[in-house]
Image (cartoon, rainbow, N blue to C red):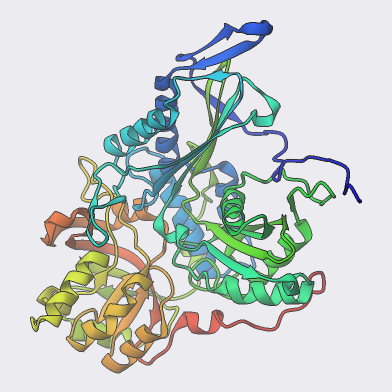
Length: 557
């Protein structure tokens, strides 16, 4: 009888050396004690875990990695970038500069707090690590100008906001990180709904594993991501996996650059590896889409990570995930020398070019006065094609998921469309907390597609004739706009802090104050940037760029 192959072992994801630059948070709450057999143990107090978590959640809400900021600057400097690419990149850099002031978070969707920890075998705690970490999340979200987005299910159908952004997703592992038994290492992430909703799992077969079929598959699936998660993206594609859920988790880690130091070739020990050739090919593929940094161009993605994993012979999962323009993650560690957190960029202004808006604008910017009657606003918008850049000034009504559902219930009960939905353009958004002395908290757009099912009903009743949000929309929205004379305007996804500081002048609640950030608001905006995405003639900018096209094999592009 065959005994099979000789035993070998490798971690599924050998992450390599840690090259992170850290800053010291504190040296309190940690100590080293002698143990049996001459072993030395690191003791960590709960307060150290709480302090590290609170500090990490603060930093990732306000600061970005220098490499991410350098990639934004590279778009501005790239002569092949479209004018819209450069405009979006400039706006995101300005947003980063405002967020770094520590008052307005970079995105209004301050996300689900996600923490992964790996505790070495010589690290001693009180055993309530998850509770101490959750307390740090609580402190950050209740003390800072962040948004509460977590809903507690009270029944199968009824929910209520927890008012603290808890629960967090906390995963703790017993593992010597990088071979150090006296270290406790962490990955902190804040994942907003937009990018989290763009995680995909496809259960494929061996038939996918050839260059031509793979590129055809990715051409089709990656276009479906669209722009609602705020590109340019850090894109991760994972091929294979011991299970579907492991493939998805690996994709999330890869999108956060957590797996950048994986090997770049496979072996019979069956570990995962990065395929650098396929990464380059997929990046070029995305640049040919024409989607660009939200409104046309080359920069749908900053970069691509492709990870190949082992698989069961009868399964071939493929997972896709993105990290968006709010690229919020940081690693951390607790060692005998103290509590350390990844050093993020606190001076993003150094990445801003010495240019004015005029250097970036090579096409007309149309100014739209929202103080005029709705019919006059639409008569102005109909003069211009899709992709036209706009600057909006005047009143907007803000309403999103729950408010739309409540208005739909009224219509179903025979009640009229609220007049504010007839008179004003509707902005799909939900603000973060308003800091003292500000008109608004961070107040960027939310994903438009979640409101698609309401558009036909609302426009038939004279409401939602001009809509403003982020991302592509379904055919039913295009059809409704053509039938009723409506428009969908795309707002830049990502620069929520800049919009709050520079564009929003007044905010008041119109209806449903009990819904918190989901209430109906009325806001006054000035020079609010937008683009025509869907017009009253049935034109949709995204309709063409989301159609798959013939692609060549890897290495033959």
